[in-house]
Image (cartoon, rainbow, N blue to C red):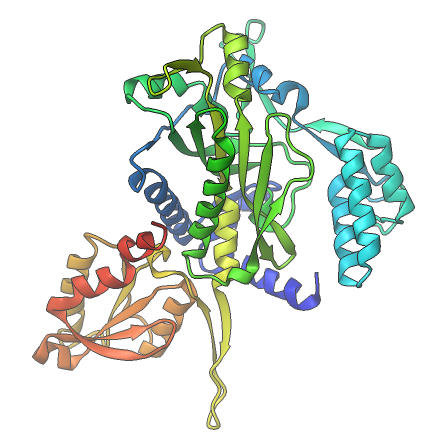
Amino acid sequence: MSKQTDDFFKSIVSHSKEYGFVFQSSEIYDGLSAVYDYGQLGSELKNNLKTYWWKSMVQLNENIVGIDAAIFMHPTTWKASGHVDGFNDPMIDNKDSKKRYRADQLIEDKIARYEADGKTDKAAALLEALNIALNADDLAGLKTIIEDHNIVCPVSGTKNWTDVRQFNLMFATQMGAMADGAEQVYLRPETAQGIFVNFLNVQKTGRMKIPFGIAQIGKAFRNEVIARQFIMRMREFEQMELQFFVRPGTEMEWYNKWKETRLKWHLALGFNPDNYRYHDHDKLAHYANAAVDIEFNFPFGFKEVEGIHSRTDFDLKQHQDFSGKKMQYFDTEINQNYIPYVVETSIGLDRLFLTVLCNSLVQEDLSTDEKQDSRVVLKFPPAIAPVKAAILPLTKKDGLPEKAREIMSVLKLDYNVQYDEKDSIGKRYRRQDAIGTPICITVDHQSLEDNMVTIRHRDSMQQERVAIADLQQFVSDLVGWNTLLKKVL
């Protein structure tokens, strides 16, 4: 990471805390590593992102429904899914710094450095060696690669490494009143299995016909050893997942469709398309016959934001085998019973949140010949902005606050709006810029005479007069969901 991008990332972290987006969890007790709390503005932004996803998936698609499955599940669920035996990361420790790293990520960082230095042949050769070792589960081979390419610990700068070992990422706990009779259960490491075990419940009660999907937003938990890059990699996080059930033999058609649909969804937010790319998996998970990531160019490089996977019939077949319950669907169009294939789209909500911050935070130089000036602004897409409008009386007297409150009482029924009368109007504009509010509605003395207000636009800082009677429609056209959702249809 260059100094410039490192400084930008630090600005994101500090801005998030200063303005109430993200706090370190349990900060008064020196915090809990890789766990974060969303503040008053962060929770609003997060809820808006969930709404955008839910409306796009469930509301706009007649053949997709949503559920909310429990975090705790029968422990055999995770045996069937393969998580008990195979949900591991290859880890390596540095004996000097006492820090633990994912071996594959250390090697990927080295590949990125080779590419940055123009050593493309070395980067390609190292990538090939990494893929061979990962596909063969060759832990000793991973350590050899690290040693041969002189990969050092980022903290100690030494090559004093332990052997590479597998580390299971699931959190285990006990369920039951008595310790002796308690049953070991797990905090779910993904939300997908809650959908799979409810496949028949949803299909029958909803009278769903293949192809159809089940969507879910929910918490997941992974005991990440490498906790870094702010909310990029956390132990408690939130996923938005769709499992789309299709007829066997059609899965690749649907896989390609969802691959295109999901990238279009990201780009509909209006961010620079050059910062997004597809990355096909070189090593497929045990359940998949195709997989691709949508990656975003974070300040620390391209990283996964969303995954699209063709999961075959692995999950439903495994749950059928372990539960003894048939997970088949009778297709009346072809008069045949079969276990459906599944195409999955899975997006990390916290990572999406971070992409929005990275795309939106801008520091602008507004200096003129007469004076030096600048502002920090979050240029959120209006529909997902935490605060949709700020109502600002020009002064705290002459009936202006009362008029502003009247406007607020109407708008707050539909939108999250703020009222602010403290400090000069210029300082209030800057505060709203810093939290990403799309418009400020200023009530001045003229408003009492002509029933019009001044709208100040966040991005352009241009101002216009709008009749109070037209405000609801004006705000709706600017920040409502319709404009954004039409882009994903």
